[in-house]
Length: 184
Image 1 (cartoon, rainbow, N blue to C red):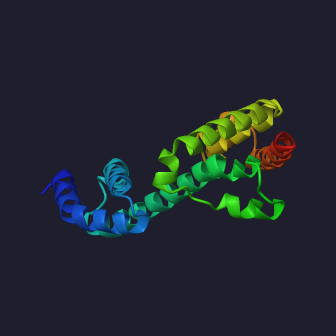
Image 2 (cartoon, helix red, strand yellow):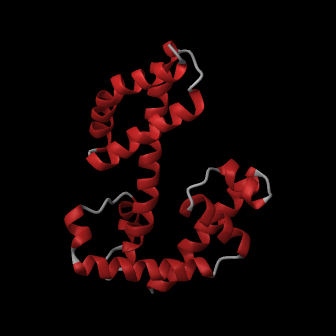
Image 3 (tube, rainbow, N blue to C red):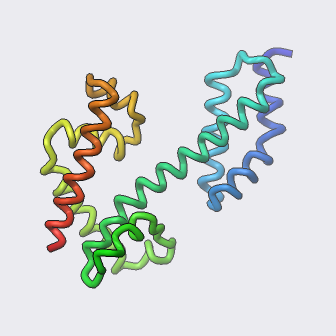
């Protein structure tokens, strides 16, 4: 049996279990399908020539990492869409941290008033990002918008990983101040 046949057989056997595991983890059927598909593609691309007995452990590690990546992306997206909800009138300053962890329910997202508020908040964020110094803006957008890791961002920017961390930290701090000023 060739390694391609062994890989195809393994993926066929693990597909349903992996889907259930991902669906339980993310509580979203469509996202779970995407996660399983991405995990299978990563296994096929990177480990097709690995011994068949290693597939279960490799696939499980890839699946878990893909689920973690999904949560990281969701956290970043939710942060930038909802963390600026402090711009809405009537919020107390001590509620700011709570807003960072807030995840908008699907029925809230479909509400036209919430869509309008989200659109206004995103326009404020874009305006604040444009005011950042060039290197901070570049680092921020590559890390949080393009979802690159620190190593990829450093390579893209032609600088060290420490510089990327510094630029990102300063950008987040500056955005916080800019957005707070826009609130007032």
